[in-house]
Amino acid sequence: MSYAEAKQIALLRLELRTCWEKQDYAGAGVALARLSQVAGNDNELSAEVRRWAFKLQVA
Image (tube, rainbow, N blue to C red; front, side, top):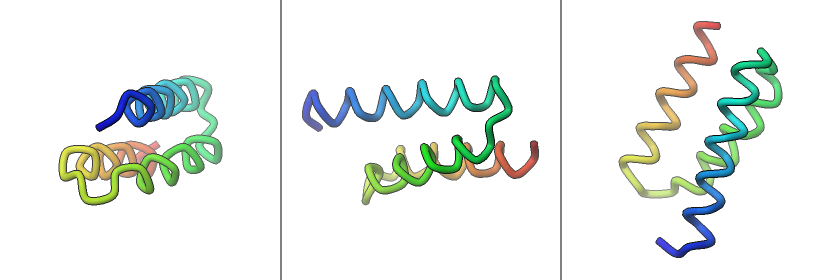
């Protein structure tokens, strides 16, 4: 993983946390979709996407 990819993932995580705190579920959905695209075949990131998706559905 390149530095640029790692930075993009970190920014998406930050955006997800911010949206969660502000209860902006539409914005979180957009960030989650982008994280899902970045995750690709990475099992760990795919699992994180699933956890966020579950968390957003429960809210």
